[in-house]
Image 1 (cartoon, rainbow, N blue to C red):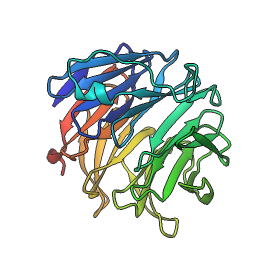
Image 2: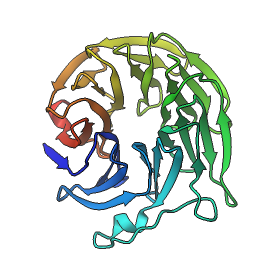
Image 3: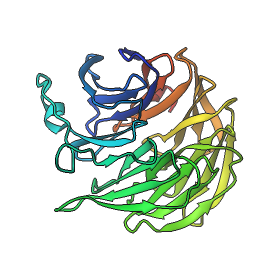
Image 4: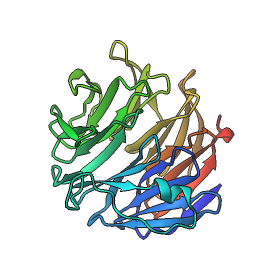
Length: 310
């Protein structure tokens, strides 16, 4: 187990680089840190947001890092050369629009979540006013499609690995499926009895998991949009979900300060972790599926071997 220390506030967002060598973390201290996982040290710190950083996502080609903040901005950082050169400490904020403006400004009072499409050509952002935006990158300029449907904050977004669907989840207790290219709503999944904070697709895109303040992890069949099963174990709100790389396990993190690994074949817990890092706000699984990371309210990030639970 490796513990990363350096943030001055709770860690709210995590993302592995596509090659698995770097972990990005975002915090209430308004900064983003890029960690060299070979050394456990901060390689670079990114500053620019004026409020807590709530969401991070690397593009699949590792050229960009998207960050969302409660300062109302969605930013893209040019990081490819930075990730390739350990000694290069130069970095400029890569802004899609001209004149140094972020990709999106004043997005509904704040950005809660971001997600890149598997092909890297689209980026979605969810906001605190209940709106979501789907950005398609073209040769000329980015095109934005609004996703209207949620009434309260959109707290989670996830693209299906097959690229066909985008899932959104919000405080209105619903999970919604969208056509990822056209931005059209396909279905509304209901059953949660409180805020939904997180959603994740299985690697085969056939199942979708969601969870939130009702403490129940729900699994949905994507083909017919029906509920499969509910997983109970957390004693407080579930903040984040990620599937293992092989799709056999689901990992959940919550305000009850635990991380739980679920066997999806049986619906039972494989392992429960409590590392003393406080409320666990975020999770990430390495691209090779061997390790995972969790960020806590005590400002620390824990990285552990998934084969313990697999």
